Image (cartoon, rainbow, N blue to C red; front, side):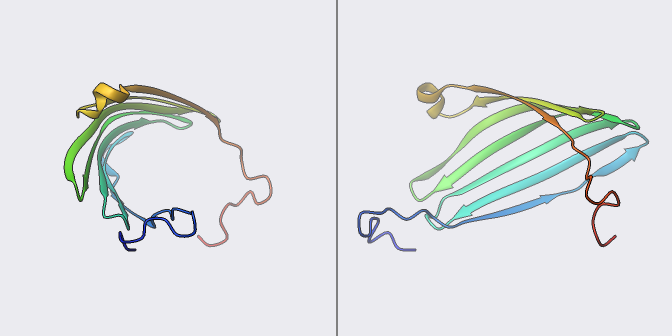
Length: 137
């Protein structure tokens, strides 16, 4: 919790992190909803990262497709800056899930580290131990 002793016995302690997430699914027509959200990452090194997100989702009986955008900003003891802008697409077809995001840097850090592209592929395995799902409903 103190910046006076960054290394104790040859070990640099990791900062304690706190995450806060806020969002809402706004169903405005049948089969389509909008999800604005925000996530804040605070830690004991006094840095703060905030993600602002908006996602639109069209869904059916067994599939859905979503598209949106995420904006990330950061602030620490040495200053603040906007870090990135990321278009996102994701979806689900049956038990298969997929996603893609392109992270575009909007700060001076982009010159050193560049942009990135991420893909995801997943499988939704049904709960074979308890088909009813959670204990409390």
